[in-house]
Image 1 (cartoon, rainbow, N blue to C red):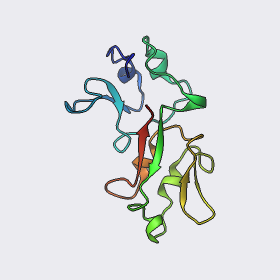
Image 2: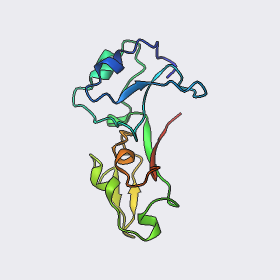
Image 3: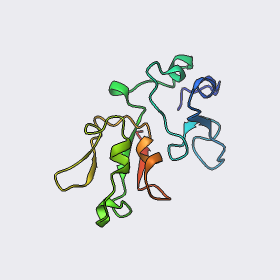
Image 4: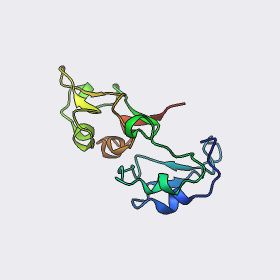
Amino acid sequence: MQLCNECYQCVAQCPHLAICVCRQQDNLCYGKPMIVAHEQPCYLCSDFPCIAACESGALQLEHSGSLNGVAKIDTERCLAFNGLFCRACVNACPLMDEALFINSAGLPQVNPEKCTGCGICENQCSMEQPAIKITFKA
């Protein structure tokens, strides 16, 4: 985020319109490009046109495809953790059974080493306020 020069080329190049400009004045990201996963996640384009367009180097792939975020499950809100059958997040994950999987207890679990932070799981969560959210690494 510190390297971003606010050229917005990443916003212009995203074919899925996943990258928008933060307009919340009380947000640390104000004026910067961001992904609001529950509205429109990153679909991990094979050629990452957003990264290619970023001349400042602010957008980079972290550790084998990570977008500098990781999914975190709110176990108090997650339907599966409350005795209901739901696998919406797991079924939506492009790295199903690697980044997000059903553990031996029959519950969804995130592998932070494999999670890309794309936000598809958050976008597909059945809850009105998603029980799985992308948290960004410092």
